Length: 199
Image (cartoon, rainbow, N blue to C red):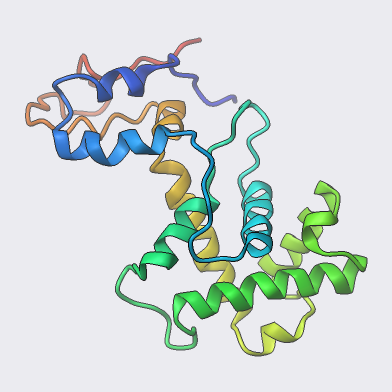
């Protein structure tokens, strides 16, 4: 069964309303900015590698301008932010990303004799598949737990995608309307601010 489609512009309109606090609006509106991003942490080649990896993990063929996920990771690493914990087998985030992205390129070279960004989408998917199932070749994986890296990468890209207003619009999420006043809390009861799926 196809997932429901919500009216285009729902979240963007809600963000401009008095149902969203200024702090939340200030956090979400910049995510709609489409100004080209200049990497702050990664060099240009590594940033393009991250963009290519993110595009295969979160392909967005229906969008004329895909939600960019690599800038979220690059900016966080440049600022030294973290979620305050890491697996004890994992190095610090900056080193983990350098090793992990390098390992993805090593796997691409071993499997297809080309860097990841030069591969077809089908070949890129095969490389990502070997990383996801823990069988990717490459010496970097001797220094970095492949399963933990992929778990962290997938979690961060997922968080980046679904914290974007366009992705929230896609799934009908309006939880950013954080001004008090939610009254209908029983199952299948919608507030007026909540969009109804379009058939």
